[in-house]
Length: 481
Image (cartoon, rainbow, N blue to C red; front, side, top):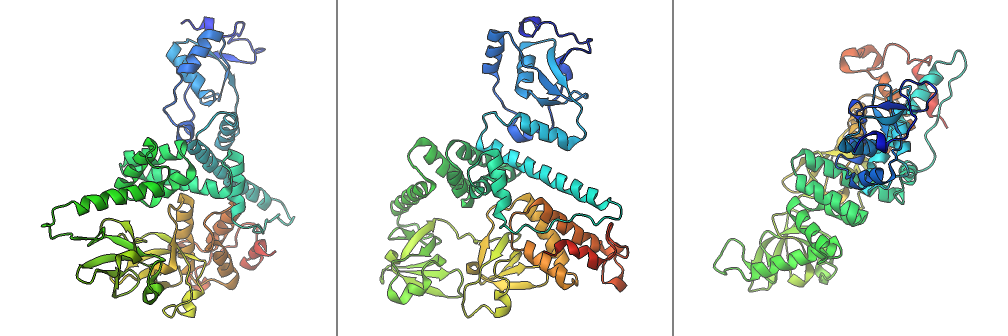
């Protein structure tokens, strides 16, 4: 199809009075963030047919360098049609952030998948951080006037994610957070080469629901694939139902296995090596173990009992089959792993000291898993020895959280004054951060340069004053309410 037949007439490339410029689509290039947000594989067949039928081409928006801001799908259609020129509105933006904002705004009304909405949310958050930094710098350049400083917001940390969720159209902030964890995990799996697992996560997120996709995060890759297949085929309506079907199938297979195989004898549907949880049906003398997880160590056929090694205890307890709930038919998986980010949630028990309980609600990093089930948690200023029952892992920590964890734990190891410690206490209880909160953290870091720049006489603080402040004391006025 010729280019002239599909394009508006009367647009002259050389006429300055025209609103649009005619440009060869081969000379244009996609915005680098477009594919990362909206994906590369976009079907433009219907758009091609529309252009052929209507013989009209909506102008693109591009920068003077030929980077497309609006109209990536129309550009692909133009290339498919072999058009020699397309109408383009050329706009010069002040910086890359302005380009990104225009890209997002131009795509605000398009039909998007949940994944695309999450990636838009991540981009909007980047923009807000950038704008906040620009505002902070502009305030510091004001002559003798006192710079405007914003205090920590009084609302809870959910305010930021609620605002992002509302902007991109994903229900509540909690729903957005779940969806963001799924997208992050999918990206991680793709980097590791587990493309099928990544695709299953995104397919469930986009075609099923956020909750269904989020429920898959704690499953091993093989089981995740099987669960997704059952849900997609309609055999199971939820991950919970799919897991139940898988366990029933595995139990039937084990019961029908050759009884001469000594490696994994079966008893009442349980096998040595299974991972189980003590159910609410536990007898009175075993009620204290309800909710605990453990590994099946021995099947006692004569007594019709099962010996279970409780995860948080250095002991084996006997149960009847009716007291147990099968979780995973395989070797047990630690609820936490080295490197995990976990929130500390210590309930009252004799093993926990008051010094440990003061860290309730804080997050830390798992540094070691003990042989007897204990877990070493780095909280920055010290290392805690706790048990899995005292921890709530962050399923899929965001890249931002991982960075903040490393930065806060590093600062915790320094000798800080009371105000600085209070600021880090505040940050170490949160999983999501507003742009202003990140600026506050960055400001504290500027007072504590790297080891090579530290002066022992100043306890590691910078010798020079922070820009715009007369001293460290006046600097912390930024945090006073």
